[in-house]
Length: 275
Ligand code: GLN
Image 1 (tube, rainbow, N blue to C red):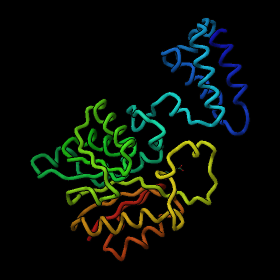
Image 2: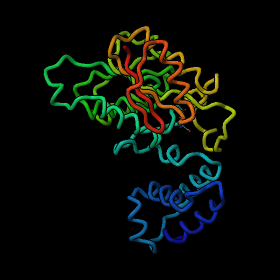
Image 3: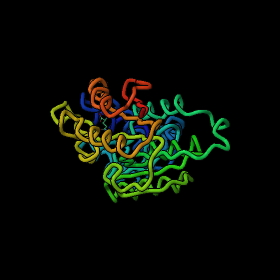
């Protein structure tokens, strides 16, 4: 079978409302299988795929038909321009989480301005793949960055990503801040915030439930995080949280009595400063 034939057939097999990016998914799976960039497929539509590669691509297509996310099938996902390894032990990095990095840009002074100033401690709580904390370390090398997660398997993936991307970070198995030994200056957290009653795509069923769902309308874990940061932080500590746009007002209400002042807000992110 040629590249063009396989792609056409695969895209047809995925073509229903549940796979809005059928053609793209097919291309990513085939390109990954024959170890070429996606542009190669367009440049060589009439090239024959060897039988072994075709079998592997077909097996991967079957996974996709079961709604396994493409990132788990190929084992990686891009976040803020860098490639992160993922496995079903970690949430797949989402484009909306890049808003936390953009927000950090607004609240962090430029690298030069920080030179010579005592280092700042940033902790990424519930790091998963490590995408937030590792990106922060690579964008602002002067930060002392730590990653925490309750899952040993997740932390192993985060450590692998830190090694591959050459980011010097510490890692801790910790329930939020409970196993983290310092007082943080900046807290980044993309915690579970999905209310189990919300609509869920079939893809979500393949991601770790611990990383997605929380009680109290999805705010249970964020609430505990706010309490812990209030107890362990100091005046000026920044807390940057990701949440659903519908939750940001309630999060403001929860945080205010603990002394947090809202500094910035984006669609999926909110930043507080401890008074
Ligand atoms: N935004 C993610 C989703 O809708 C949820 C991520 C999270 O719970 N931290 O799938």
